[in-house]
Length: 149
Image 1 (cartoon, rainbow, N blue to C red):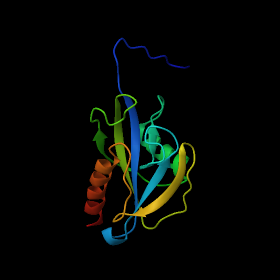
Image 2 (cartoon, rainbow, N blue to C red; image 1 turned 90 degrees about the vertical axis):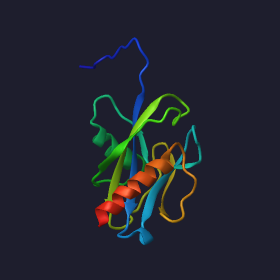
Image 3 (cartoon, one colour; image 1 turned 90 degrees about the horizontal axis):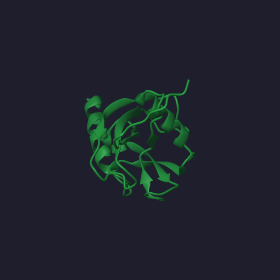
């Protein structure tokens, strides 16, 4: 049975973003990024992620979006936190729940769905990122470092 949702007031959209880190130390850490195929921020690098479906848990959204955009599957994710700065998405009011995925080594990835490319970048040499993904990445790397101690 399909649920219909009707509200008399505006509400934000919910998305997820995933900080996927491969490596055992900051010196060899690699970050998985996707190149956005569509506006906003078309052709810019970003964290893999996307919109939550109405019938899925937010963690499931993170795992699904990571696989859809990069082909990376079978990974665990840990919630980093929520990011909801007004204006973070120029399309509309969007709140994202960010996740961290820790891998020992890089895996083969390929841009799919609405990502034209997917690549691993050195944590020490990252391109400019779309949205507020630099802030999300910073918080994700802080959590990753604390987990490595």
